[in-house]
Each structure stands twice: as structure tokens, then as C-alpha cells.
Length: 158
Image (cartoon, rainbow, N blue to C red; front, side, top):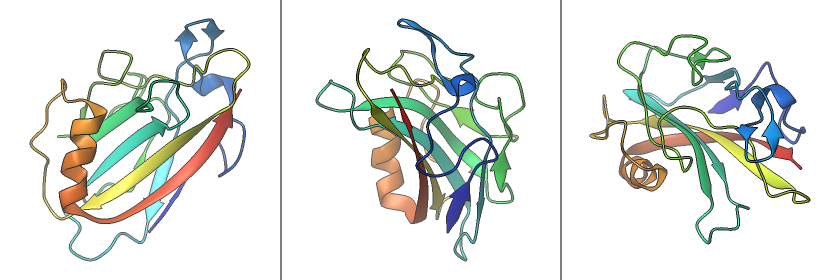
């Protein structure tokens, strides 16, 4: 399985368009385009996440979660997590560490460089039993038991 984006390549600096607007930053907070291919046979749904393992919290920082993406879906358009474009029917966004559902862009402490790992997980179930209030850890816990394959693309912001 492979994930890619029209907005950046693996290892690139995150464009300002996808940076958080707040916490000292003035980005546009627009979720990036993501696409994937070569999902394994038996895939019934997808989950997309964005996670910063470098956040100074002891547990990282969840920036985005989208669950229950239909198996027929192979991409999310730019802005789907920000209300600029539509999510696929049935997909839900879950709570980020910013405290609400929806995309929250990069916002590392000033002077620090952080990684933002966008992951797509192919699952063996039609949907996870999570709702908009589910934390990234809860989504990840459920993904763990149902993942057939996962792929990532990582960008850096400082």
C-alpha cells in the first residue's frame, strides 16, 4: 500500500497552507490532499490520521483523524478535514488534541522541528465503533485490531 499527496512529498517541509492558525502561527489550517493505492484484498474501510510524535507531551499530538472512509475511496481532497471540501459519505472526523474534531495543522513550540506523520490504514471492518468525540489514541487502539495494511507520508515543520 502507498500513500501520496499533491501538496507535498515524503520528507518535505509542510507548506504554510497546512499549518495551524493559532498558538503563535498564522497558517491557513487547510488539510492536505491525500491519496492511496494498492490496498490489500479484503479492505472494507480506511482510517486517515495525522500524528506528531515530537510534541512535548509524553504522548505526542493527534492532529487529525478520519474514520469509516468507504473502501471505494482512494483519496481525500485538499480541505476535506477543514470544511472546504466534502468527506466521503459515512466518514467521520474524530477529536484531535486541539480538543475538537477536524484537521489541526502543524504548530510546534517556537524553535522546534517536528514530524507530521499522515497515515492511511486499510481495515477489515466496514466501520470502527468510534464517534466524533473519540481521541486519537482510541482510534489508534481500534485500528490496531483491524488493520490489514498501513502507509505513511511524513512532512516536517519548524
